[in-house]
Length: 114
Image (cartoon, rainbow, N blue to C red; front, top):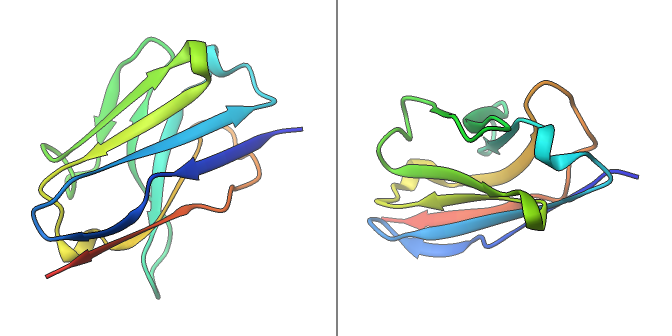
């Protein structure tokens, strides 16, 4: 059974930082490209960062230079380091495989105050 569990969200002031974690189980994590998605109120879910099995990364223009995705295959965990946060980064953040769609986890709420 696949489980994706996100954590690390919270309330932070603009300009602050947060580190999100996503623990995966039930998948062959080390060969799976993973991504971080977010969904703001009233908007569609969007992919903001992804990392391949060999560590190559790609970012949406809106977060490039501020967010860093990484992974620890020994822990089956993918991370999202977020810096210079803006109010428009406020959303529920989710992780999932990039080329497959596993059941979504509960997500973790990130709220950035101005």
